[in-house]
Image (cartoon, rainbow, N blue to C red):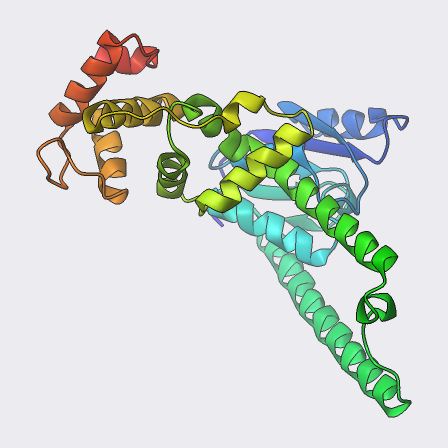
Amino acid sequence: MPPPLVNPRLIGYSRVSTEDQANDAQLDELHAAGCAEIHQEHGSGASRARPVLARLLREIKPGEVLVVVRLDRLARSVSHLLEVIETLEARKAHFRSLRDPIDTATPQGIFSLQVLGAVAQLERSLISERTRAGIKAAKARGKKPGNPGMRERRPEAIRKIALAREKVYMDDLIAGADRWMPTVRRMRPQHPWGDIVRVLGSGGQPWTVARLRRAVGKLVSQHMADPTLLRPAPRKNPEDRLMTLIAGIAMTDPSLSLRDIGVQLERMRERTPRGGLTWSASSVKKQLDRARKAGLALPSSLQDAV
């Protein structure tokens, strides 16, 4: 974890299980602790879909502290808690629970976290050991492990398993959609799926064309995305395709400089109009000039730059 700031900015997170429950008690404690802003979420503690928490973990800044009233407001399990804290660590941020001895900006808090990690490892080992012992005992009594309905290919069992898997898939999809859907919305259907996959991949999001199309299709089927996103991309000549691809990168992340866009194109192995693999700022600028003249809505910062 990074060294704590003298007066770190505190970001509160509160959660209740249903819309009928009130967040007031949590909000009062978080305000009293000095939280500059508080993010509220309604959802079961066992649910994997936490869109508010997912967005908060992506947007928290280095040195800031994520604060909760109790650990159970944040995580489903010890392993989930450790996963959240690892994410914060990668963002160079801290974590604090007001009613538990965990504050990752202090040595005592780090120690408590290490103890939790050891407990989580022991829990996983015990579960694995119990599972193996149960399977062995069942086999000794002539029983086969697994779901009898699935072994016998019963339609109702297959349908139940399929629905459960689909729910988990949709929960995960919705929880993470704000990481990749803005890029899809900006680039589809003007760009082919392969270009969008490469843009997302250059930002550390490992999609394939098949997986991305399926994900967008699922959101469209749930009326959570515009059906026009699934339309075929128009054919473009190579120069127009390159121009709109670069404009799409610029619109996806307005904070990028001309050189940043060039580096991203190099990671994507995108060739320059002359066939090279090294992009200069002036080459990117030329393509953005063309995009602006074509009427594409570039970020204002980039329009100033070009």
